[in-house]
Image (tube, rainbow, N blue to C red; front, side, top):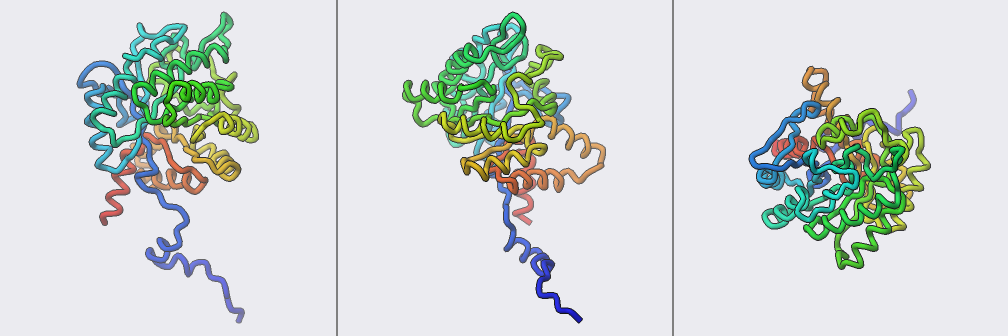
Amino acid sequence: MSILTHRPRRMRKHENIRKLVRENILTTSDLIYPIFIVNGKKQRQNIDSMPSIYRISIDELMLEVEELTKLGILAIALFPSVEENKKSLDAKESFNDNGLLQQAVRELKKNHPQISVITDIALDPFTTHGQDGLIDNNGYVLNDKTVQVLVKQALSHAKAGADIIAPSDMMDGRIGIIRQALEENNFIHTNILAYSAKYASNYYGPFRDAIGSAKNLGKDSKQTYQIDPANSNESLREVELDINQGADIVMIKPGTPYLDIIYRVKQTFGLPTFAYHVSGEYAMLKAAAQNNWINEEEVVLENLMSFKRAGADAILSYYSKQAALWLKNKNNT
């Protein structure tokens, strides 16, 4: 009878052993909660395609952050949904120092300085056509003219007190120009989270509903500036460019369908790497859970753990709040 010298199951025989040899751990400090904000007071608007996610006014945002802090979430990402009359071809509302997002940041830093505030640098919430930049007469997004507006937007957010600004537009060269502008204006401590590998994905639909750009974008796409889902090496080139231009952190978006990209980026560059568990991923999991096709808690936590295993240092997810509660309950049992 042969003797088995290697029995991997020995390391799985009970929970204590499994915990001792566990390679990755998901904690609340790994989670970033995205929040949609709107003008007004006592506003908590449903988003049909994203159950349990709302557009909220600044007063409600203050209450939300209190709850998030108690759960141990350290950072939030803000996305504005502005009225149609504030949208324009030149997206000038994006750099209005008294704009919705700028007001929200100031209130957060005054009332909740403990929370790290990430702000989105992109023009799609502010353009009448729903693209992330300024367009020419043929609808093509103009790179360099867009970057000029993005710089104004970034400086406006930094001035309001944003801890981390996150250019998500995928324009060429914008990280270097924004970094230079921040340095020249003495915002030397403002971090840049670059959406370096943002794919032209079909998983963004519910997000576009939430910020009100879906109907403006219509049947147009963003394929001339977001990465082709078929490409992998291209994302490494984009990440390297952003790192060389002064990015502190890089983002891969979407998350689950691009775990290979998260892994390659982390292995290649070693820079802090974030993943975005996007709206379409959230909506699919919610739909399956509501139909009792999956165990929502276990599937979501497994999904989030996959980001950690791939190499993500933090995860921006619409499930962050719920996941933090689940993790807290698990730790208390």
